[in-house]
Image (cartoon, rainbow over all chains, first blue to last red; front, side, top):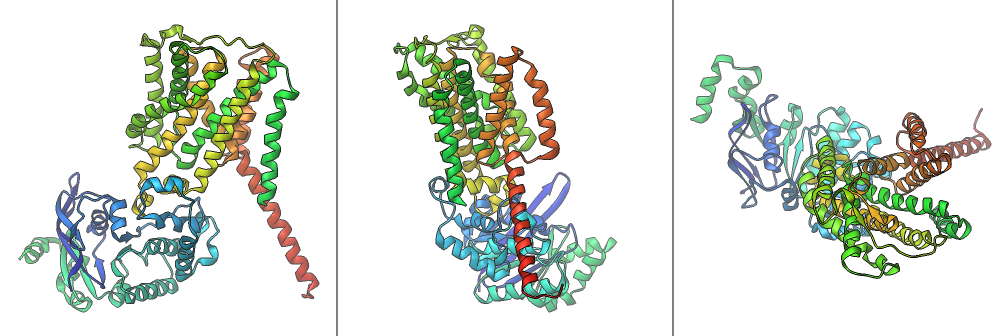
Length: 259
Length: 334
């Protein structure tokens, strides 16, 4: 297996805050990779760098053998990397179905949009199929702003899926939703993974990550700390330190990870 | 439902077509021409700003460029003053579009309030150009060749050309709304970054919307210049124009198709009517203030959205009444 998506030596500072420092990450083709770490460890920034929302100060991002380091978000999406946001972001004042249709045109030139109608029959069909897959097909005509938080999460997942990306980056898919829905989302991810989709998931819910992922990377203070199988990561004392706060041991910890 | 809507459109169109045949007083056909020009501008403005949420307050630039282009062409081309000049109207639109490209390219890099401020600035820059360049005639403005049509008949050709432009813009605006491009504009209004992350080329989409809207406003400006026969920097590069056009769209319903048409119809015609009938150019401001207070308090999303919600709520009430009747007649215990 080769890495489908990888970030190598990525650094990014916001003013004096070093959000990412020489951080590396690999996502294997067909895997469900978990990305965990305490708050502020740089997970979302890494997502933003990968998807083109934030330009890194140093380092490279490669996808499927191609360098996509400074590609813009629309280009990254067109290459086959879809993402969701931590605080779900949907288009509130258009219908659920129209939300889906926004995402179906990723391979078209912008000029084409001027001359064609909003959607073709196939696109509506595909959109409805994915809405049905996540279980909100009957809400298709509703204004998206009227959806509950959980339904918004499902919609966000659905409209990323409708564009048929190879890799899907999920930022806290289980955050703020009830247990039933968490299990449901985990089930969907597994189904999709069986069908060949690769996932990279940021999540704070340890049980969710440990059950679902076949590879986990732990971040701490902008660096990748440990990487391995869920069981290995769980047993690693460095991870515990990172979460509980090492204090003075931080320096030792940095040396350890460097070496 | 769709058929019913078409009937309303056809009815409205018939009223507009018949108006100058029934009302022949030049005083009122004059109001008709100005109202149509504003309807064209408000719909054009809404086609970009209403759909995308980028509130532009510099549409006067395109109106003025259209007007001055018409003025300069009719002065320098030695055309006979008459109906043939109407063929130059689209050229005014094209000139406005060419001006909109660099303005949009620069201004659309920023969002919300910053965008609003930049567009306001562009208006004053262009007003200054018009005041200070020799070819624009400075503060003396430009006098267009006088068209020697009979006074009682003078307004009518302008009326129908303006009406044709309004119809054209309304069709374009409806087409945009139904197109993929229009959906992308709405997505940008709701969450631009998210749209970008779903593959929408936001820069190109915004710039095309901005220039399209400039094109149609420029055409309206060209007709305005011909109609008045004399243009000044302060009348065509007019900050009040920017605000009026935006307010018309807000009053009628931002981002809707009929809203700007209705808003312009109400505001411009009543403003002109009040000015004419009370020979007082400022009276309308008091009434407008009151009108806007009412709209903002009771229908903040505009008249069209307010009415639409009323109708759909009534339909829902009727439906639930039917449902409960069925429930009762099906023998459910009461």
